[in-house]
Image (cartoon, rainbow, N blue to C red; front, side, top):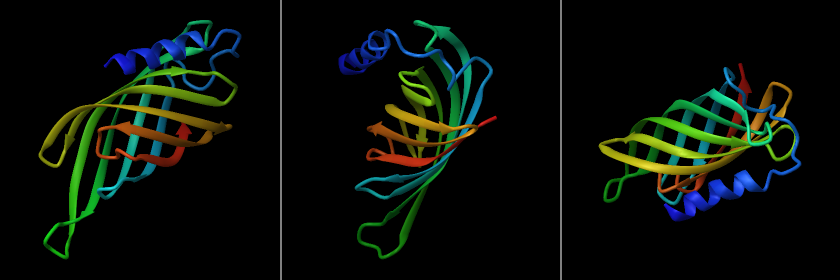
Length: 155
């Protein structure tokens, strides 16, 4: 938890002199489709983030809430079949724009994967080309522990 708080503080204080907030703002809805990489299997998911607060810390910070739903496929041990778990969760993110069109964020996930319940963290970034963007997100103990790559769209 100390490392997580240290990361939040670094995001806040490193942004002195950065550009105005433009990648996530209050009322902004962002959808993402992602595929993951992990030592344990392959996660596919869809996520939505909705901006609830923006324009603080030199106008570059925002907070969003949202949800995610996904499928996690893996090889079953001792069985040559394919295992599948469904995932469903809520997420909250702290966003900070260090440079134009780059939305960096860190947050928490609360949800279920198969029969497991967990609270996990993540760190990610989205780079926008207008309304569309590419993203990368690294999990800290969640089903996509290695991370995810995907595309995003602002609505």
